[in-house]
Image (tube, rainbow, N blue to C red; front, top):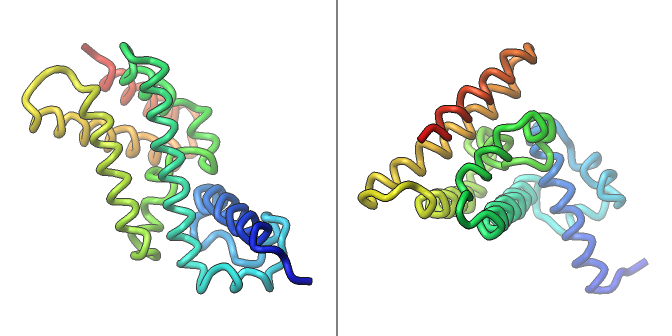
Length: 189
C-alpha cells in the first residue's frame, strides 16, 4: 500500500524523533534499525525508503535533538530574563535530567557516539555547540568578550561533564554529589 507524501513526511519525522530519543537512551550501537522502526510503529522494510543508512539517520536525529535542546534553552532564557543562567544550570544538573537521557541534553548523551561513529553529525554538533556557547555568553557577567566566551565554554563543559559522570557512576550518593558540586561552583557569585 502506497502512502501519501504527507504521510511519508510524518513517518520520517516520527522515525527521526524516536531515533533522537533512543540514540540518547541506548547509544548508537545500543539500538538496531529494526527496533528503531518498531518503536516508531513502522516496519523495518520501510527504513531504507527514508534513509540510506543508520548513520544518515543518526545525523538527522542528532540535528533534531540539538535543535530541541537549543529551543529549550531559548525558552528558559525568555521565561527567566533576569535569572536565566541559574535557571539553566538548576534545570540541567538535576536527577530528573540524569535519569532521562532520552529527552535530555544531546551533548551529554550523544557526544561520544558523534565523535566515534557518526562523523557526518559532527558539523551539526559543532554548530549547535557554538550556538549554546553564544547563548551562555550573553548570560555571563560583564567582562571582555573573550572572558565571557571562556566562561560560557567552561560552564557548558562542566555541565556536560557532570552529567556524563553522574550517569556513569553506580553510587547514587556520589552521582548526586557530582551534580551538586558542579551546580554550586557554577552558581557561586
